[in-house]
Amino acid sequence: MSHEIMKNRAPHPARAAAIRSIETVEAGDREGWLENFHAEAVLEDPVGVSPMDPEGKGHHGIDAIAAFWDNFIGTGNVRFHIRESFACGNECANVGTITTRSAEGAVGRCELVMVYKVDAEGKVLSLRAFWEVDEMMADFF
Image (cartoon, rainbow, N blue to C red; front, side):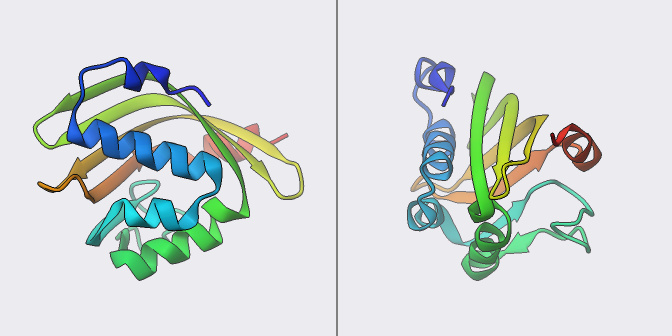
């Protein structure tokens, strides 16, 4: 786990939501991760058409976000290394590397930018992750 840079930056509601998201994903805490989202949140991971989102419209609402966890996040082990964090307005953009280990032991890495937008209570309204699927697939070993 390497997102200490986020904890050392100025407190911000969107950054706090991003930290909760990262920590719950790394801990394998499905319910904690889902509790971080607004009931009508939208998850785009990655943004656009991908094997995870064939229509490129994102995953809308808690049920769809829970299915995303079940089908993708929960199937392996995910680690983040965040190098930069920029918060303004009700959003926070984090730049880093994600490392995923599948249940079969395959490991992949890719660079990404994650943008969190929160409501007045700090619940995630949208999470948009910018990363290149082909890069991740090519890097599995």
